[in-house]
Length: 236
Ligand SMILES: *Cc1c(COP(=O)(O)O)cnc(C)c1O
Image (tube, rainbow, N blue to C red; front, side):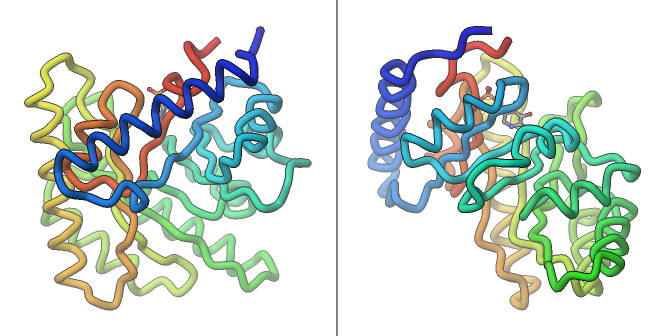
């Protein structure tokens, strides 16, 4: 597969950045508070090098094994997050590979990560985000209600190796901009409420917005955009 050229990537990145700035300005936000994650799933390792060469340092992958292979001998100033669903049998490799797992929606997976970190002879702590299903689409993962979210947050608070840093969602796949906005407004509200209810948590990452909807996400308070196709073009 042919990866796009450095020039094209650089042009895509500056377009994304100016769209982020414009969306932030529309709502009086500081665009500096919005981090851009480069999503490299299905792209080769050279995609990581391309983005790294343009100054990007935050990366996302949605499969554990693919990420472990792709990122095994790349610069260690990279911050790598798991953004796809985590299966319990991949928890050990995930704990070793990522600095943050954004897709926690069950106590079992959180406990599996904690257990493996305990057994790994390391002081490592893992950041996690709780994934909320804001679209109601059955095919998507994530917690469905505020009550479930608070319950899971409380259970994970008891675990010493996991730091809850915020919330993540995959917005509805629809052309209806209002529906997407409602999903992001709801997540931002849950994020604020969770922070207020558990002041001990750092709660500083609101991960929402992908290539098709990132401007709405910025307008509604996102602090982390997860972008693949907006940067690299269509996935192979
Ligand atoms: C693939 C993926 C992205 C990036 O999607 P694009 O539409 O290519 O920007 C973001 N978040 C998650 C969870 C993904 O799986």
